[in-house]
Image (cartoon, rainbow over all chains, first blue to last red; front, side, top):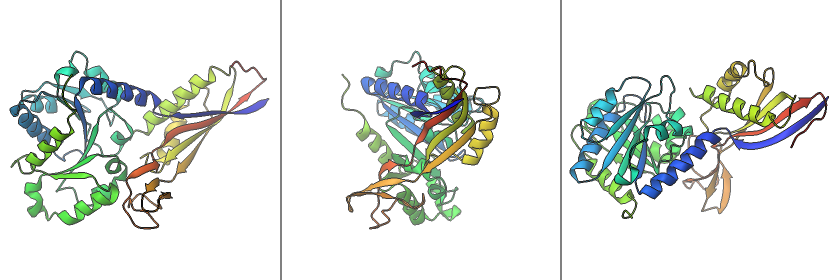
Length: 222
Length: 122
């Protein structure tokens, strides 16, 4: 009987990471800006994305979206009303999107004909943080109805985000939302992060967000 | 929770590794998880028992080592270990820190295997 130790030193999510790397190379080659939107269920990702798609299209940008949910294509239908090409990813019980699902649902789309691709993740503040989808910008969203300590409760996600969005700011006052505390908590977990305070309903704050998107776009298409 | 997906990936990768060690039985699987990896060890252990059934990993022990968060502090010009996940400030000088050096690992470090005889194919 012999016992031995075999060193592996390999990433558990190696397969996802490799696929995500390949996706990132495709996005870069196609000069499309890809964003991964993550939040709890009910934060308002879809309403926010609807507005974003509409506004970007109005300004002549070419946009598309993938939207993840366990079941139903309700969100895809809502987003498609903006006129943008949209595909629903149903995960059937899986609590996050994986690079493979994204890759499969991009089939047939010419990425080089897009300026922006939005990926709306499954509503969940924990699991999506481990799965790279090849995005350039990870966006963490929280609404004024959720409590200012959300970033402290879910540090993994907020710490891995490149931008944070506070949604439903039109409801801030009736909800007794403590803006200063929320901003402080986000910065405590992710120092220096860009924060946008928006209302998809009234359009407040959307101009700054759209300006940020334009600034993040890769320079000129080949 | 995504612990079952994580454990399934571990099982797949260990089985793949075993191809080079015919007849080997797995005694132990050692993981390295960063404190920011959002994986709960209890759930992992629970899923591990289920996911390893009827595989060469059945009956093996899962050992999890948690790695603390290490950030680069420019003011101190040093890598500093954070005491927790609630504040991304340098514990020495209080400056906000955003350059993560360790803490998101999700890694299989090694496996311990047992063979009847030495039959290593490399």
